[in-house]
Image 1 (cartoon, rainbow, N blue to C red):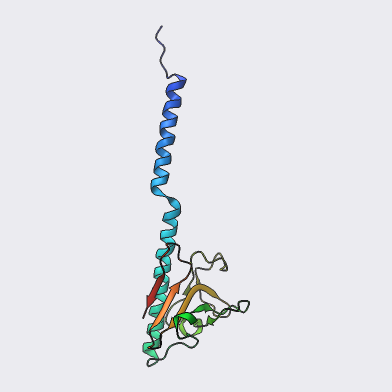
Image 2: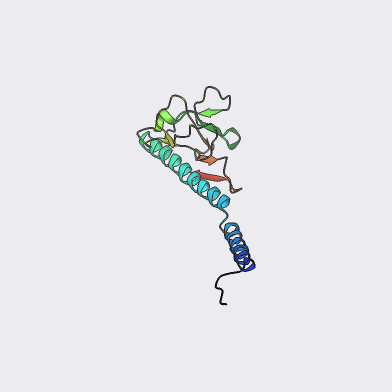
Length: 157
């Protein structure tokens, strides 16, 4: 008698091999790292957008910067105007939106942000998750303090 088919051991062996290959693939792809890298890429673009908007503001205002940008890295201020927060804040939204940037971008993982807010266009009560400061020489730095890659994400004018 000629029986066609697979034995239970053959089927189990194939399932085990597929599971091992799937495990290796998931470890190699590392979705958590991919998401972290994507978030840091977004942060890099965001800080550059803010620095470019401040730079355009400075050009149009004969070298003056938006008000409330503190001097010194030790005095770096959170960009925003959150009345519930006692941190030093730099309320620059009114100076930049909508003339120099359509809306202020938000950190992709900031916990305090509304889930639907990709950027702030209303400057009454906002927090974007980035910090800003200027040096004594007038260079402006915007940083992303919540960067996931272990490196400081910073853009300067």
